Image (cartoon, rainbow, N blue to C red; front, side, top):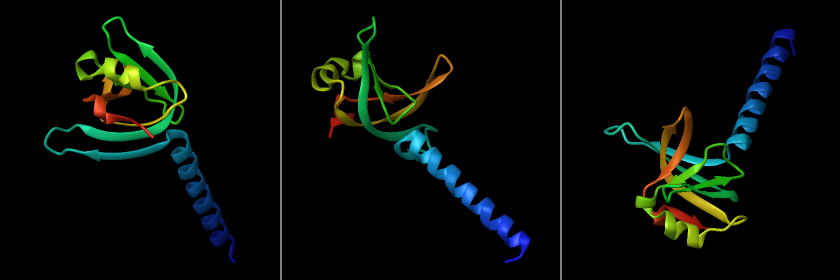
Length: 117
């Protein structure tokens, strides 16, 4: 192999390695977008590492495979989710990506969108 070909092969492996690390760091996500609303839907799976209730009756779930918290408002069934989900459970959450105080989060619309696996 020529020197240039070796460089191309090394760069290809570096790119594939970067994609593998990004996939591992971000977890299992399945995204789709609605072109009419501009909202991006997302599905995240992972083990619940923290559950936090807010003063307004909402719920924030954190899963090990995602840097984005999962937000369930009181209007979207936070009480129902809180009674079903416990720390250590493996869950699948469906929601839309939103921004809150400069950080992205997954916002769940219905309690059925958080399921225990």
